[in-house]
Image 1 (cartoon, rainbow over the protein chains, first blue to last red):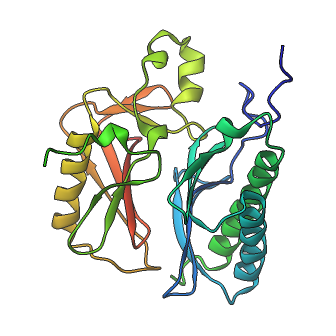
Image 2 (image 1 turned 180 degrees about the horizontal axis):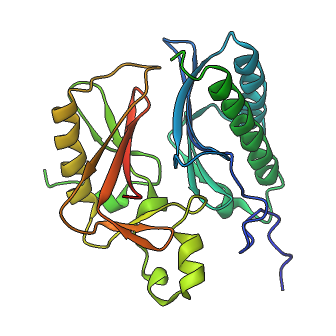
Length: 134
Length: 123
């Protein structure tokens, strides 16, 4: 029997709790990140924001996003939440990679999830700080 | 050339690219799955909730959904505006899906300025 999958896909969703990135891509012309996330507070199912790269949260998101690209070994064009603790990453070479397809061999998958969780946290902070200023 | 089978398009990829530059993308987490039909009620609440995504009923096929979203985009007059998100919702005259186990008639359309998708929300 193979080892358990080291991804937050447990039935209780304990680890895959909001805030969660719902979708994410870097918008080159506008130089920032278009992010839709599932907030941890409030009734909205998702919230969409744009975080300029040259902002406090944008610089942190840049760091996490670069790390994800490093882990994947390619430029990431788009990330979408596939439900629970699973994500699909669309790469610049045209390939798609789903975290759940990679486990349990790919140890990078759980770190990608962790970095996306951090991006979700930055998104929520940015959204809260800029509420009413959009 | 025949029509593209939209179900061959992977999660998060573009189902239709509009002339105005917007792209309608596939979001599998909001699609109906046969496995949902045999779930215990409490499990269905979780699997159609915030973390796993609300679900369209099976009759909302990808071709139907894409056509519907495109009509909403025309009504709203949205065009490609990178970095400027928009959203709109519509109340239909019939149930279209489940949100946390509860039937709903309302759909939200979300555009992040470039990519567009839709999902059921609470009434």
